[in-house]
Image (cartoon, rainbow, N blue to C red; front, side):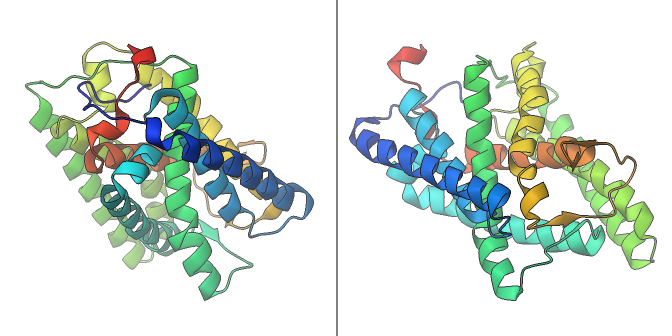
Length: 301
C-alpha cells in the first residue's frame, strides 16, 4: 500500500476479522442506499450514509486484505482513533466556515438548517468524508501496486518543513487580508493556491516528523506515490462529487480561473480541492495513529 510506514509494529488482526466482515457488508448496503437517495430520490441528505458506507467498505477492505486501515486503529486503539476523528471534526468546521464560506464563499447548503449543518456537515459529513478519502486512497494504491519507500533521513528536511509551513501561513494571512479589504476576487484566487500549498504543508509536517510523506517518496526516487496521487485524487473526488450533481446537498459557486467541468464537477474542485482533502487526513492518520495500525500481513512481504 502506498504512503505507508516502513518499520511497522506487530499487530494481530485475527480477532477483528468477523467484525470487519460485518462492517464490509454494512458499508456496501449504506453505499447503495446513498446512491439511491442521490440519483433516484435526489435527497440532499444522501451524503451522510454515503461517507459512512464508503468508509466502512474501504476501511474493512483494507483491514481484511492488508491490515492497514484507520479501522484497524478503531478496533485496537480507540483512544488514538477518537483523537484523529476529533481533530478532523475541528478542521472540518474551520475548512467549511473559514475557508469555504467566509473567505471564498465557494459553496452553500441550500436545504440545510443549522441543526442539519452541525450533524450532517461538521460532526459526520466532513470527518467521515476525510476518513473515506484515506481508505479509498489506500484501496486504489493497493490495486495499482503503489508500494514505495520513504526517506527517513534527509539533510534538507528542516528547510522543506519551514518553507511550506511559512508559505502556507503567508497565503492564509494574505487571503484573510484581501477578504477584509473587500477584494474577495483576489482571496478566491489565493484560496485555490492555498489548497495545494497547504496540502504540501501538511506533508512537510509528516516529512519533518519522519512519517510517510509524498516528498519522502519523491526524495528516494520513487514515482509510485506521486503517480497514485495523480490517478486517485480525481477518482476519489468524482466518487464524492458526481452523485451530488443530482442530490445537490451543496452547490459550488464563485470558483475562479476555470469553468471546465468533468461530469458536472469543476476541475479545480477535483484537483486542488480533493488533493488537499486527501493528503491532509492521510498525513494526520500517520502522525496520530500507532504504526501498528498499518502493519503488513505475511502476504505483503
